[in-house]
Length: 183
Image (cartoon, one colour):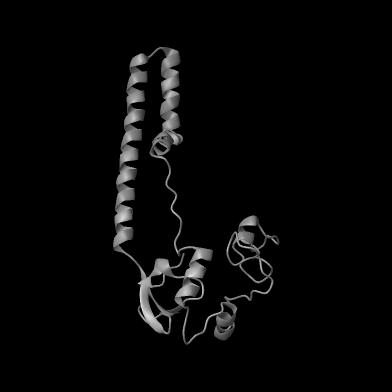
């Protein structure tokens, strides 16, 4: 992918160019020059490239092998250590301004101002941390409630499975009105 007007390809563009020009369709996977450009290929060519029989779909053994190779269909969640998240509340423009005021108050000998601004800084960090924890809890609850499912052809029959269980090569049935999430 070339950026308009730049005439050169950036590293970000290279990471997201999944064409058959020698790069892998999956980051971190070895490139295969024989892999067709699936986005532009016909349905029979795509099924052949993914080694899928359209009448049967994938078998249980194929699903297990592909899941072992590619993992679950989900975005990995990074969880940081709570202490580091709390300490991160002291890093930023507003925290730096309060810290600068504290340093100036200490240099000028205004210890009452130093204590008040220090207390404000700590209270701000605690409130921000607690609010972030609550928001993360709400997001996790919504994530559990809004489980997305997909209709796939496996072992010669249509099955409804959690979208997390999809693997490369699954034949997915999409009907009018179905919501397709872009990620």
